Image (cartoon, rainbow, N blue to C red):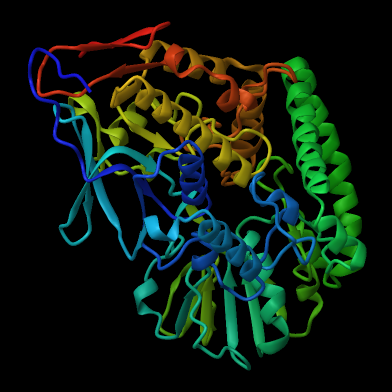
Length: 541
């Protein structure tokens, strides 16, 4: 690589790429980097193996809440044993993919990242680890997922006063024997719907505390027979399942984009009115207690949050030992929970299934943790400007750094395929930089701003935002992962039609159109790099 102005090139960092996170995103990143011929990378994770959430979540009944064929990489189909695979099988699949693609030799576990700082002169990142150690990397990929940290007390006071067993859904203590005990589960989200029916028959009393009712549909789960096992061995079947998912979801998004806002909202409202009537009838067959049935009907619409599939959750409230509690919690006590009506409830174990801090909230990105070019602070930027990212993966003044999941990053298929697509985007940019012997790349401000404008003005986003914020969050006081406290809906990405879909962006974009490339050198001057057809220049702003 040539230096500029006669000065020596910048000092080489320890690694070309550091990937933060060894879950599905980290695995996707490692695989796509290797497929692009990029082998000098390190994957770090605070846990002790690959698979991320599937190591953290080992609670009773943990399983996929999407069909198994939706939770696999397109380049690594799996022979699933059930329609909705159990957590252990998903964990084994993730680790097998990592092993087969040689990622273990590029991984370091038990490592927690404290902050990341960009050095513009040397053209690399310094990654500060808990304990004081540092790593230097030319490129950094953040693969920490959408659900970042569990809500450890759900905002309920005096959690430290409770003397019994406090169990987090993400971090289940399997050494504790809950059989024959009085147990409370706080929360009625996806984790609760798997935990509750899995322990109901073994505990003396099971009280489930509900703040907001959740849509819970029957889960058509079963083990595959001979035909199913045969289909699992067919690449064509896996491809067909993926494409069916892709087209079905895109059809919904395209319809929302094409319909006038008022018509789209009226259609949603009408559909939900019919669905709520059917849901009440469904509950009559499963729940004997009339008050419980009434409380289990969600106030919010089906699209306000991710609907869940439950196997046995609703039936729990027809058991002699199963009770739905809707009286709000005042605080924890030494022996259990006090509700606002002054009643003290005693429990041997309390399970916190109260959700996570999502990556859709600006406050989920602490100030001072990620510092880019010219004093740029990612936490401050999101607090001041809201959630945004070019192609859902990067923003200006963050050279050589990407998210595997960022604002407006969902491409409408599945979490795994989204990680695969995002990792492909990043690998293509890094490969393009290497091809022209550049080592600093940054998205152009104009490209980023145009992308963000397209996201927030697209009819689908307008409908989603009005529906979520005005018709759900404000009207029903429901907490939605799909919208944030700023009133944004920064998760789902518009499609813009079946042709030239934004969901195909990672496959079709030209890095030279949207990124600047330069050579890092200890010089304040800007540096140009030519690749024969494009001249890409980064001038310090």
